[in-house]
Image 1 (tube, rainbow, N blue to C red):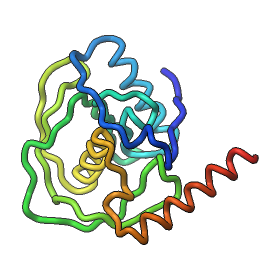
Image 2 (cartoon, rainbow, N blue to C red):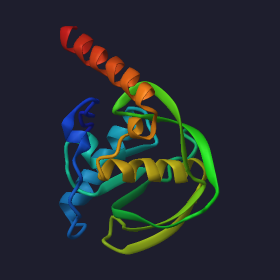
Image 3 (tube, one colour):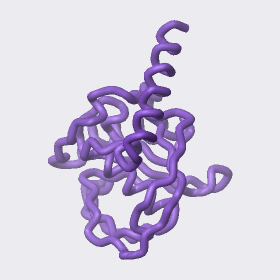
Length: 172
């Protein structure tokens, strides 16, 4: 397994829609494992393949207690097949937007269908942080970013901060 570079916004690669995974094979499993290692090292609770420069519909999520047993989910071609009408407002962050946190409205619960790491079709119901995280990561697969859920003013402020952050990182 390897820790991979996480692409930071603004970067046009993050705005591209990802291609479906034909089948979860050894190469895709390796990507999933590397994504998990990268996510844990960041640290984060979710990561989508485009954040590491791979335009495949792959996400990993682990919202378990970091001090307890890990409960990673490796998902290819995840899709929300049902969502509650109840909406929650929850603060979100993103590994592609370091140190930026904003409140986003999303359905409180979702039902997700995906291919697991053994190429089996699975479904599960997510709620709370897990539901928010899965929706956030699926957004990445469609080229939708955290800032796309914000007002024009908030979006421009965060994108300016990110440009300064990237410029400072290059200068260092």
